[in-house]
Length: 144
Image (cartoon, helix red, strand yellow):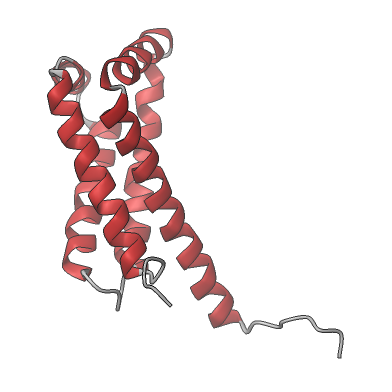
């Protein structure tokens, strides 16, 4: 025996899904903390990035993929209705930013980028809360 752990296909897929869900929680936490600590700086960097490369908004379609993963991967996890609703919102946002007519998409992005810093802090708080809930649902916050 070489001491290696051998995982069956289903177990490996389950672990991969856990890692992807933890990555989503990490992204939410990083974004949320950035919006809580320095919303003005974050939004000015985002505005500059979108000015330099307007096609960067197409990368938001990745949100649709991550939303689908969230819905499928959260089956059986605590707070499942939260994950389904959040996943559907992510899919909707990703599809909108990918396929909406340019004038409508630009108007929505302009409105979103023109909010007051306190608005971004509320979004940051929400993202941090979702991150904590997802990590709790995955069992990472339970005391031994």
